[in-house]
Structure formats: C-alpha cells, structure tokens
Length: 225
Image (cartoon, rainbow, N blue to C red; front, side, top):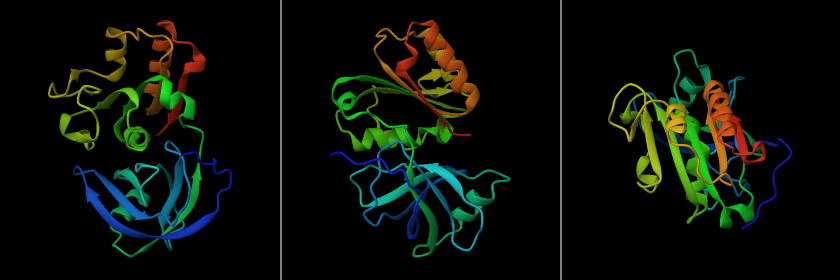
C-alpha cells in the first residue's frame, strides 16, 4: 500500500486510548488515528491539550493499525514526557500531522537487506518498520544499558534482534552497538543502514560503516535526542 508523504503540519486534537507501561521509565501511549495517513519512520508533534509544550516522537505503531502509538521515555526534567504519562483514556492531545523522510522506499522493502541500529527509545521507527512490512529482511541492533530495558523484544524475530547491553551481560552482546559493528563488519556493502538514537552513536556508527566500505548513499540517520 502506498501513502503520500505529509508535507504540511496540520494540527488536530486526538483522544487517548491507553497507556502501556514497559519499564519504570518507558511507556507506550496509544491514541486515536482518525484515518490520518503516515509512513513508518515518520514522526509527530505531541502534547497534552492545554499545555503549551509539545515534543516530537517517532511513530511506534504500524501503518495498517487504526491507532497511533508512540514510545516515550520519562526523563527527570522532561515536562512533556511527565505530562503525557499522567493522561487518562478519553483525554484530548494536541497533535500535528506526521512528517519526515526517514522511511523505506517501496522497492527496497521487497528487495533489499536492512541493518537497523538504535539506542534507547530510538527503536521506535524500527518497530513501526517491522510491524508495517511483514517479511522485511533486516537485522536490528538495539543499544541499551540493561537487558530489562528492551522494548517489546517479542515483536522481532529472535534471530534478527541483537541486544547490545553496556552494563550487564544479559543481552545478545555485551557492549555498545558501535563495538558490535567494529567486531562484526557488514559483509554485503549493498545493505541499507538506518540509525536512530543519540547523536554520538550515529556519528560513530556512520564513520565505522563508511570505513567498512558501505557507501554513504546507503546510510540514513534520524537523530532522536
């Protein structure tokens, strides 16, 4: 199914459906979609109605679902993440239409091999990719501190997900995603590599893959925080 990419930022008010707690600091907020089109990998601007503050979040849910979901980490000084954690079902949210170009081309979805590299809640767009496009040929590296911080890992094929844990050895790899990349070079240089997470990881991973011979036109980044 093809969707047009939204280029405007039309504002709407959508209602909360539920909150799903994942870890002590992360949760998934589900709210109405109202037939608004989007492409997996796009992001939205979201805030509590009546509050002047809002924040960008990558869409966590799939293109074919009749709701929106976003994956949120509550941060100590994060006004929006704290406010959204306290919303109730039926409560209205301020919302701006999905935008962004961190998406997969339709021809690549069917024919290409992907490497997804995420840190923390930067896994959100990759969750949307995998749920939107069954049969996608991918490998997903998720960098977290502790294995318990993995976000709904049952979503992914266990042979395609590698948890890179920096502070325990309970994931698939003990160390950062960049350490994994150095020790496990990309063999197929035609692999399409997508990064989402903190800017330091993205810059380092980008340089590592360039040195391994992956062309720059196969590298795509979304700086998450």
